[in-house]
Image 1 (cartoon, rainbow over the protein chains, first blue to last red):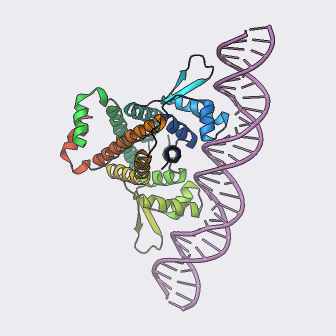
Image 2: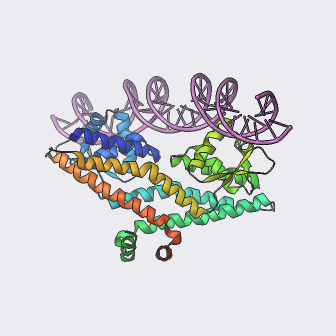
Image 3: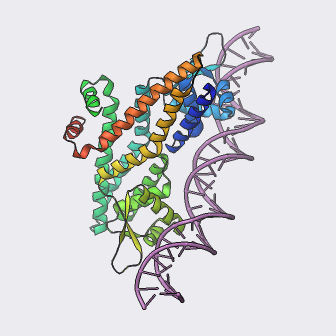
Length: 168
Length: 168
DNA sequence: ATTATATTTCAAAAATATTTGAAAATTCAA
DNA sequence: TTGAATTTTCAAATATTTTTGAAATATAAT
């Protein structure tokens, strides 16, 4: 396998994987490209390599920065901005987990709490079962979210290191 | 809040959440509906409640069954098929984790392995960095996948229960 | 202050994904 | 078997998401 072939395969695959996870293809591809690039890349470089428009590149670079998983860099003497990826994978995982928790899990928790406690006066079988199920779901999602938080604190936490070892 | 309002809110929210996670809206809505329904529902019931077509219902019910998170049930004397959701939330989490691992993580691992070890003869800085990064990524994703596996085995495993407790 | 360079914005176009509905296939009671 | 009830399939229609590209905005060197 030639280097460029391998790089391409990696970038494409990462893009496809991203879209399965609700992240758009270009965003995942840009991230993949920056992950394997030893040098910071300019917007031009990225447009060129991925064959995408300026607007597309601009918007997705911003989105990646909002997620906190890529950074801007300035080169002395250069007018352009350059970008690099967070390359510490633990740090990357933490940021992604935090971002998804904030965007997706927290709002879901709010709704679950509202609906599980919000129905008054209705004593029907349906209403009772509904309250029961949604409240269980609330507890469960809350527990899962807490667990993510705990795992993301792992690095500083000796007991979690132990846990990791046990889990192999 | 009235019961039907609450139910509707829940089903809608679950649908929206689903699409953020790469699961289509109807599929997530059907699942939500079955989760909170005390009785098995027929395809007609579901079409009625969610205002969707027969084809849509049929396809998404099948997809949910493929995920192993809903089941068919037959009522004596009834010709129709009825559906119920897996209501044990631990079991649900296990199935979802297994399914995503199978569909998304395993194929990604394969590509990572291929590309991280597949580039021969190229001694350029780029090629070396690429091999390094993708190989780190392979180890990382593999570890994450193993951890998911471990967590899904928790129920029978006393030490993991302890871990859960420690994690609060 | 002017101009050249770089980035962002956003409406329209293109690409993807989902949904519909009617025809085909299946199932089972008579 | 036959045929009514039910489910599945899939091409076409709709809806949603992503991408483009050109104009607007920002930045910085002269």
